[in-house]
Image 1 (cartoon, one colour):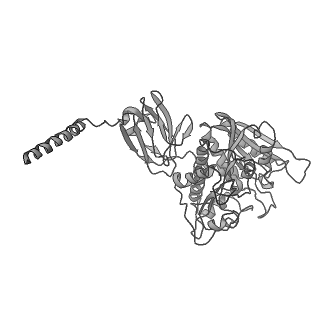
Image 2 (cartoon, rainbow, N blue to C red; image 1 turned 45 degrees about the vertical axis):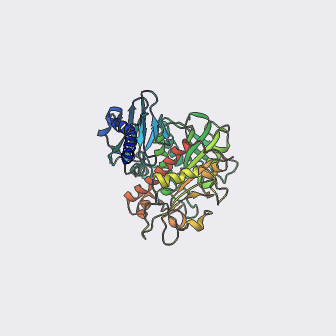
Length: 467
């Protein structure tokens, strides 16, 4: 009896081991040899390094291959547009793409795999680079615009008060138009005269257009280039308007350099508005009139991103050791208890996941501005990033037309005493944040946030006009 049991167990064991032995004898799939299929900037993948914040050209060769990366850390661009999933297949025998990280990324992992289950992962070394939008570039352009005497090294485009007959404003508008023209944009100076109302100055906008893949929609970014006139409230006006809003004006110039080499889904305008300080008259004229440079009335207006008062914000620190507040508000916010628009998800994703900002950082006390409807919850929140109804700048023009909007704003009112005053100078901006390096770091962060928001929103079909 015992021998029969042993025999049965042995037979069962042999039956089980047979298939296992066959599986174990099969060779495991070979890893993909990265250097045989991938080049980075024309070099074998294993020899490459990635400069943080800079473009890199990749070519993946092999039918059926795919390359992917952690979407929060590595941005992949195909045919000139961001691939939101950061996972790109080879269509044919090869695919060419571009890679971009933020200046704040810490590693680049690339995974290549094929239909047979083979894969390989590359951990590519990172080094400091020159970001495609940088605080250093911004500062140099600010110095060029806000210096005193025109020369080869000085534009001297101060005193940009909107009004008929202000030659300084006209000079500046022509300079800004030339910047966009030189990058290949279809650029217009849009002039609106209002002689029937002598209490209101005329409006003069600079509008740069870039055609999109679709002829059915439109989207844009903008900043106002006019500054508070002499005697203007609350601080008496300014000659430089460094913070409000030469800072935002220069960000648009830097964004234009980046977007010139990319593709966009919708017709896109990059705008410098006038008469914001006199009641958003420039952006309203663009949005609600019929002219060659005006907002098309037969296309869906998807979204608009506004840059106003840039650079005095986190990670810059006040003299007392507290960080300056950082404000970024999406809208429209029709129900304060619910998220109303898809662009809010992009706003949160860019700051929380891509830029890895300290979203819950708070100060011991409260900030000095309390104009938004969520202020009771956010009065001491450093990264004040949320959906809101806040107005006071040109995004309101487009929000009123149903566009989903984002408004970027640094410290204001009690948190920056030079607002609309003669003290609103580049020198003062440097002083209040404790040095040029701190200012460059602060402006670079918000520029990357806004640029990424645009790139993600451009490739998110769910962002539609709410009207």
